[in-house]
Picture 1 (cartoon, rainbow, N blue to C red):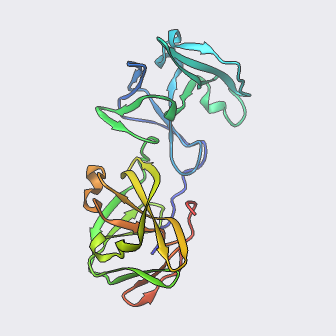
Picture 2 (cartoon, one colour; picture 1 turned 135 degrees about the vertical axis):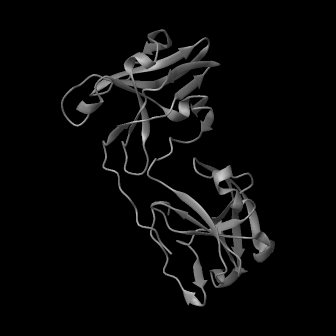
Picture 3 (cartoon, rainbow, N blue to C red; picture 1 turned 180 degrees about the vertical axis):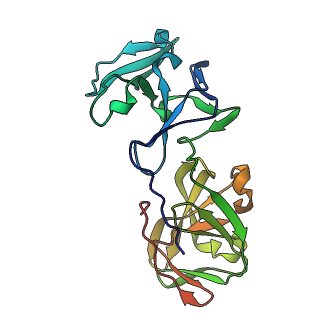
Length: 250
């Protein structure tokens, strides 16, 4: 099962209707209704701000340099985020439309808020939708020829531009061969994921299963369910073997 990817052109820029706040060192260094969404990469947007949205008292010039702008450290009290801000000045070339804007490294800040809701990892794409639907499809999953899941009540997660993910109750899985992994990842649409390895025969399939202990409200139906990387396992749906999808994750 797959989903057609919608590609927003690199460099596409549009105003955000949301109030955006950026927290660092106990201070909201940005609080604006004039944020812009810029697709620096095709997969998701980044927040950019007018220069005057960030008070210069929080900025110190960095020793780093940029062809199309200046790089600054953010300093609040005894906290410093090195090279966390790029101010764009150049009016020509590929970055010309960014003149007068600045970008703050998302992960260098303590927290980001859209209105009063905290957002994680990166801003949500306004053109992406995530739906979870309960299903009665018969789904079997094998890893290295070993059946690891068999269910007739999966939850299917449809996320714009990505393969459909099948979430399965742990009680329908061979949890006796699941081994906890230390890996965690974050998704702005689902939350923080934990992972399992699977010991199938003599081989260890690392980080091949993930699950959300506390998913965000919009996808609460997958709480406690597990999903497999269909790119790395064999899946049958209603008796028909599925082609392994191709994605940028594997």
